[in-house]
Length: 271
Image (tube, rainbow, N blue to C red):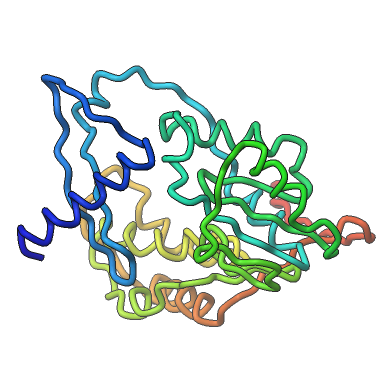
C-alpha cells in the first residue's frame, strides 16, 4: 500500500470518527503513533499504539468469564445466535477494559440463555420462544448497536471461542492439522515442550491424555531445560498416538444432568 493510499484511508477514518463524535479535535504535547492494519478478507483499520500511555496508566482489573464454562453452556443448546457489537469499543464512553464489566452488568441474570465475552454475545436456548427478544431489549435500552453482517441467528452449529458447538456437542473447530502432521521428531527438550503444547491444548478431547503423553513428559523431568533427549520406542509411540487421536476429529458431548448418570472413576492403587 502506497503512502498516498494510507493517507487517504486514515483521513477517511478520522473524519468518520469525528462525525460519530468518537473523537474530538484537541491539542496536546503527547501523541501516540497510528498504523494501518491489514488482514486477509477484512477491511483495513487504523490502530493506535498506546503502549507508552499504558505504562503510566493505573490498571483496573475485571475478570473475564471462564471460556470452557461458556463453551459448555452454549454447546448444549438447540438454537444459537452470535451477536457482534458494531465497533463495540466505540459505542460507550468507556475504556476497552471496561467493556467486559459493562456487558456483564447488562446481561446480569441472563446466564441461562445469554453469555458475553468482550464485545461478542452468545444467545442459546432449547426452544425458539423469546430466543432473542430479551437480549435485544437490553441492548436497545443501553443504546448499543449490533453489526448484522457479523452476526449469526438461530444456528444449529456455530464456531464459538474456537470450537464448533451446537446440538449438545463440540468439535475441535479449526485444528492446525498440517502443523501437527509435519511436526518433526523432537531431538531436545525445547522441541518436546513445543510439540506437547499442540495436543495439550486439546487434551480434553483425548481420553487418558496424561497416560499417553507420559513417555514424553518423563523426558522433561531433570533440571536441564535444553538438553538433548533419549528418544526411544515408547516416545515414538506416544508421539504418533497423540497425532492420531487428534486426526480422528474427536467430539465431546454436553452432559444432560436431568437424566441419571453413570461415572467411571479412576484412582491410583495404593501400595
